[in-house]
Length: 306
Ligand code: NAI
Image (tube, rainbow, N blue to C red):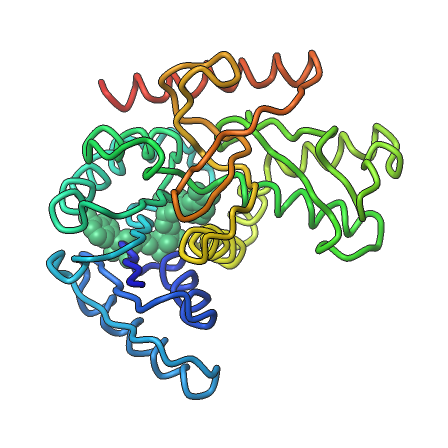
């Protein structure tokens, strides 16, 4: 298959390298800065002989080259700077992402689209509206990353492998995300049996601010290794039809009592894109947090449309 990465910045190029390493498909990196896309593509291709991959990696600023892509990942836009709220990115990124969505609809009308640009929930909604693609073909990456952070923090706390930790983070991407304790396990054991409530509270709080924690340390930009890995997992689940259940920004049409809104929920990701949204049981408190998150996302989208 062919995979197009729109935006060859930190996140786009990191994801592209991981996708190439797994040989998930031939890659086209597209950026408004053609030299950046070509330079990163060349650099990644040159890692191939050492890393042991043979896929083609090219860079361009010409949308004609994304024709025939099975998956298009959108990472173009401005990244969050220290002290900058996700909402502040809105005005710039909505314009950038709408422009990209028009090109994707024209040149890769059959593609599955994974949106990464922040503020995530509003950007996915923009792509769905502008492309007119069916809902199962447009999704947002955020929950895989947020839950990866929670998994890492739990693993650190318990001194176990993060591979054995599962976690589910629902809701919008931001400080209002809803980590679901009942769906977090370690080696199949419910997390609530292994960690006292106050330790778990601290982990949930750290997860909510996981993106900001990296931003504060880096000072020059935002996270890209864990985001790149999270994008790669989603692309793999589509092109290899794995059917993994992951939290993804999906278009709700009645699930969770919510209609016509993109928000993070568990879903089966496979060759059909978002194949099914999975409804899990929430506690009363989690339900209230989820509803608050829905409200926040609706406000964000209203602001994006204004
Ligand atoms: P970056 O600044 O390194 O890369 C962005 C790239 O987009 C640049 O190379 C820029 O030239 C390109 N670009 C800008 N306008 C464009 C246009 N109109 N067409 C094509 N390319 C264009 O930023 P980084 O760190 O790669 O982050 C990218 C986005 O991903 C940001 O919005 C960031 O907030 C978001 N992000 C989202 C995450 C999530 O969980 N959903 C996680 C991490 C980042």
